[in-house]
Image (cartoon, rainbow, N blue to C red; front, top):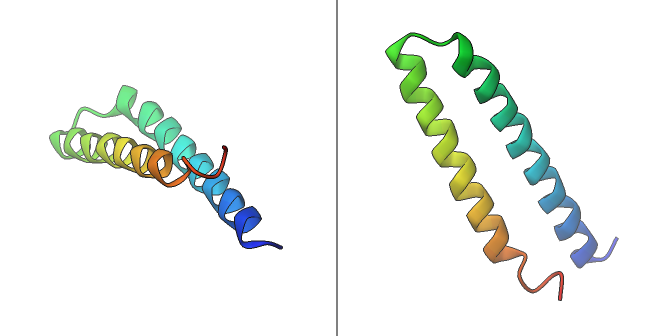
Length: 64
């Protein structure tokens, strides 16, 4: 498989993992009353945002 195809496949996988992460955070947010969960959910949201921004920057040249 050419390097570009591997990079695109990896990018799609990471986006899917970020989406699954976001779904889990949403499911837990409704049930979470503990302050530690609230902090962890904030961490998950920040990680998702940072991951999506990094993937966006990294993939700019791939979809030309």
